[in-house]
Image (tube, rainbow, N blue to C red; front, top):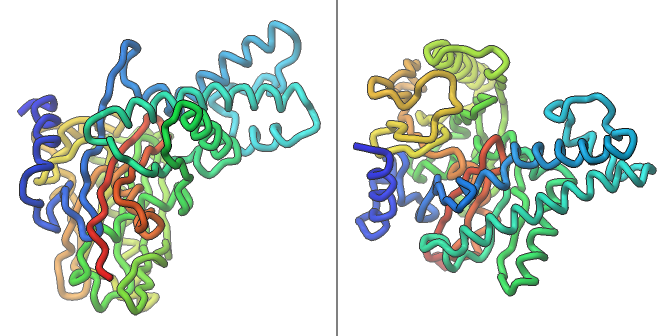
Length: 362
C-alpha cells in the first residue's frame, strides 16, 4: 500500500468507528479524537511546513547575517549559523548592542510572518477548520525569541481577521514528548501504578523517561511529570538502525531497573513517540527519513524489535504514535476548555496534529 493511499485512508477514517484504545496510532484516545496528523500540505514552493521549521529559522538568520556582513561586522562573528544557540540570540536581543538586537529582531519578524502563513494555510484545510487554539512545541518554543515569534504571528493573523490562539507548550520541549505518552493509556492500565515508561524518538535526539502519573482524586493526569530521563544525541554517533534499537533497549532496561530500585510502581506499558505516518500495526509508512537507517522498510517493526523484560509479572504493552501527536497530548490538561485545538512542533521539520476533545463529564 502506498504512502499516498494511506494518507487518504487516514482522512477517511474520521467517519469510521473509533480504533481500539490500545491500538498504535489510534484515532480515539481517552481524552480526545486525533482528527489528523502529519499533514504534508503543499504550495507552489513545496511543503508548507518547511517554511516554519527550525531549519527555516536558521536559513533566515543566515541570509540576514550575510547582508549585515556587507555593511560591516557580523554581531555573531565567525560562529557558523548552525552553532548559534537560541540562548545566545535571547541574550543578544536583550543586550546593549542595538545592531545585534536589531538583527535578531528582524529574523524573528520574518520568521513570524512565515509562521503566520503556515498557520493560515492549515486553518484553510478541511481537517483544521474551526481550530480555536494551537500549541507550539519543539525547542524554539522554550526560548524568548520563539515566544516573540509566536506572539507576533498571532497578531499578524488577528490583523487579517483570523482569530486563533498561539501558545507555547507548557512542559519543557525535551520532556513534552514523554509526558504526553500518559494520554495514550486508558485509566485501567494506569490504575494502581505510579508511573509509565515513555520514549521520544527524533531525527537528532532520542529520549527515554519514567513519567510519574501523580494522579489526583479525579484521576486527572494534569500533574504528570518526568521522574528520570535518559538522553542520547544519536545524530552525533551516526548509528545503524539496529544499533539504535539496541541502544534504545538498553536505555529502557536501565530505567526499569532504576524504577524498581526506587520503589516506583511501573505500569506494564511503554508509550513511543516517533516521526511519521504510523498504521494501526505500528508500522511507519512514511516520514521516517530523518531516523538512522530505513525505518520504513517492510521487514522492520519497532514495537516487536524491542525485547524487554517483564514489568512486575506482565509483558509490557507497547503503543506507538506520531511524535507531534504525543507532544501535543502533553497539553491536554491545559486545553480542556477547548473543543478543537492543534499542535505544531518546530523542530528539524514542522510536526502537526489536530484534536477534538471528547465532551466533558460534569
